[in-house]
Length: 115
Length: 235
Image 1 (cartoon, rainbow over the protein chains, first blue to last red):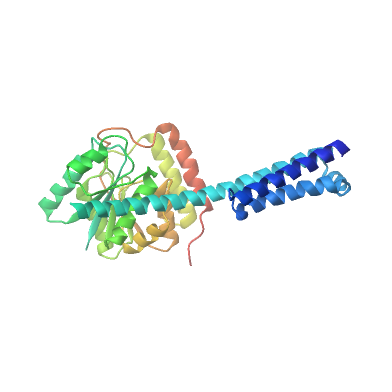
Image 2 (tube, chains in turn orange, green):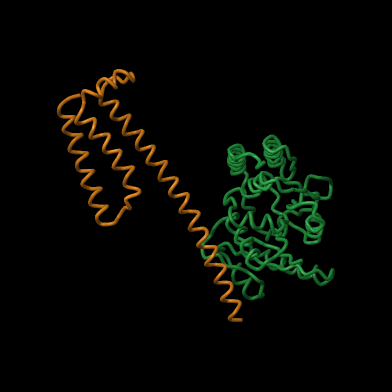
């Protein structure tokens, strides 16, 4: 892996971490959901800091170059994050549905009493 | 026995009053006491106005939830108000209130927990949907039989009655999409008894059906996958 790619990866990861910490501090994302992002960046940081380790893995897994493997890792992480987001959305959909139902039933009760 | 007819309605301004009147007429003629609750699923036509002006008992959902969420609201209402039997009934005039008795009888006699009004059991119903849709229904029916060993013919029928046990079951969890076939499998998986009785269905009087033909294939695909990934029967 070329030195410039390592630097790029390092800078990129650091910006990401800073950005995440900023969002966490501002309360824009809960800690619970930031963990999946933090662990994703942590893996990228590992690649940037210990490229030797990953060159071996690259050869072992049959990737042509380390940069290819990095793209592969990022892609896998993104898919994982998307899956987690789908799960969160589905759960929220259920919660919102229950809310709408409860409010609507209570509305009916209030209207009935008025008459 | 407190009996509730739940009518989910989305943009049914032309049909809903007739449906409600048909139930009132039936009650008067047969001395039955079927109560009605219309679930107005965020209609954007004048359904809400028609319901208000004619004093039809109804719940206005503050947002559109789709058929599953709307019907579940009815079940929750049935649970809160302690109804013994809840009947799902279409708001478009497809269903005939005189068959409600056929749906209720097996529950009253403790022969079933859930009764589905079926178009396919005999020749009671002349209206049996289009051929393509019938093939789809057959396929879903076959998948349900494969998974649960129970034969249900009219898997998409929205004319069904459930007892208190199933009302509780459906209040805690009811599928929001493609609810009819999936909820039936759920009932079977909980070892409750499902029975089908023949009913007559008409073609809808006004407006458009919610399931258009190009959506049918997508519908079938979704339903079959949902049923296949559902758990097995509780032993």
